[in-house]
Image (tube, rainbow, N blue to C red; front, side):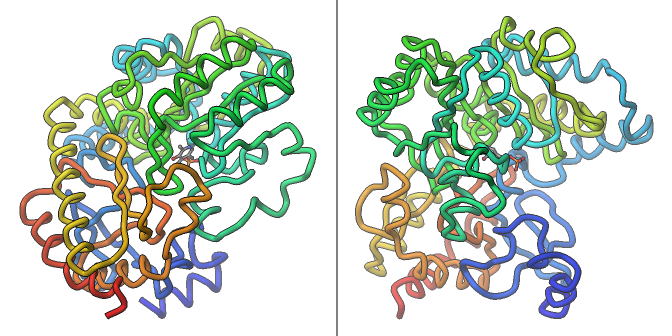
Length: 425
Ligand SMILES: *Cc1c(COP(=O)(O)O)cnc(C)c1O
């Protein structure tokens, strides 16, 4: 694969279409995937891995679920893209609203980045205010205004933000430490009448998994409501993954104004959505003055994959993913304890990640204070034993409903050696 990586780097920056895939923070050569099925991915040399990346979340049912593939094939035979409305989009929007009632109206886009970017524009249009508040370590895609102190690849590369983002583009973005209600109160006390929205992940999973402290999301809701600002809950990662109705299913009293979906909602195809209160959503063109559009938005193949995935994602699927996640969390903690490796396992529903440090992580500062070199050694030993983890210490580990006993056993078998590597032995 080193030859392929050399070729890739010759024609593609870093050899990858998205930065974290390049293995920059763990070293070595990325696995070039040829195919994936169930809980497994197979590389271009025919080597099989138990996969804990799940395409960074979408593969809730496991890779290439036969019914999802069939739905996409059937849709493909009827045409790849029309640039016109379809019945399937209506059905998918209705399916989303059934699971998440506050999603009274839904607009489809192709990526999570577009969904959050649109949510921000909509919030500014709705309030006639400029300022957006985000939390350090939360990742909301790569639009300019949201690239300040972002998680995911920005965290993996240790960047404060991004070159090419002008000061003007982030001048109206205020970054607050996660789980810090007092800091958020101060921001609202100072400039509450200029704040259009607070955007937050349902549970942050792009700096590793950092669950909201009890009452934190409620405090955001309360402050935004009192100051006439909107609350945008970014469920691109948590949506339809941690429960049938995402993070909102785990925190039922929480009622944000707008919510964004991606990843699972497209079942592995490029599809994402912004949704929320009808009076707000009606501000979008063509009904209202907030412009938003997309040539491939609501693409029929992506819509078919999303519909099939949500149809198949029943309570049994979520139960399986929850169970497998709990099993893996205790197996990892066990192996690391045995090897005397400082660690904390943090979870939010079935999402979890492992921090190589000895104290709980409440925010981005804590998340950065971990032994990423230990993670790199752990990662490579797992990979050598046929288990593919996300190649970054700042990402969640993803289970699927297809992780069967054989897959779990292979992971369990790999853990002791990986823990010893992490220990440096
Ligand atoms: C992945 C992610 C995004 C960006 O979605 P893309 O489809 O990669 O553009 C936005 N928000 C959150 C919470 C995410 O996890």
